[in-house]
Image 1: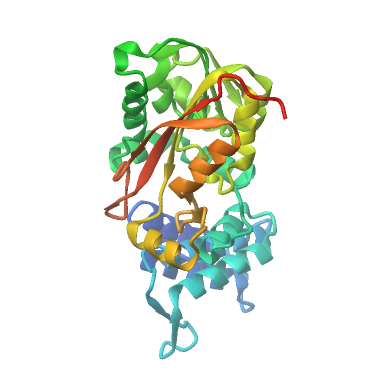
Image 2: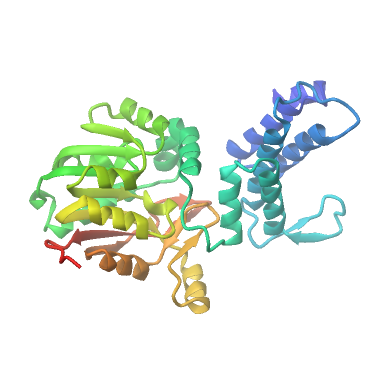
Length: 358
């Protein structure tokens, strides 16, 4: 329908832009999506004729088109060459073209948080220590309705189940796990992890930045949480103390530097309190390369826009904040991405029973 609309009116930019979105989001046809985005961009920027139904804020729309262009170029094109549009006989690394598109997106709209985040991802910007709250909120507000179907049904995600099984082993089995008075599910989403820990929680509180995904969780699991909060986990830890158990199932993959969130957990946890958290790890090849090039590396911003953390870094930051690692397991293939299993790992931490005053 979008293609037909554009054939009937070649100046109808919105139809061809939406065609690109369908090709990219629903069909994984990134090259065809790129052609559609380029066509929409050309319609909006050419001087010869007025586009049909021009957008009210042209620069914002051009920013979104360039952001989408950058995603289409970078998706599945790592290490490949891309031909220059003005001179197809010449080529450059596709990553460079993607960076250029994302830079343009930011020039058109300096508030485009998604473009900033993805540009940092492609440039491996070590100064970027976490995703902004605005980026995460926008990401999951748009993802809420299809969240579980995509994550569990299509990507085979099972990290939340494996996190609970590993947590049980700390106590010698599921029947020996104590009941925790106050449990906070950090980055609760639709309640996948919270559901795993409900039977050991006297009071279970869910907190997430995305109101939309919390509402979706209420629809799917209406009686799961005793309370749900829209907000930042760092603020919640400090406001709801003392906490007996913090669950963070793939919640901290939007932090690179874990120091602020570990400091907040230290403040929020009661003495002897526990943390069950899972994180992504880099691929085996990347781990070898990073360790060789930078032996003291701590985290890596991956092309997906998520952070992967080194085991030794997590252990060090936990010790720095008076937490002991009481269980560690690898989580290889806890989710699939572009046909391959994603590496991950989980940690169960215990805060010192009595912290010494400095």
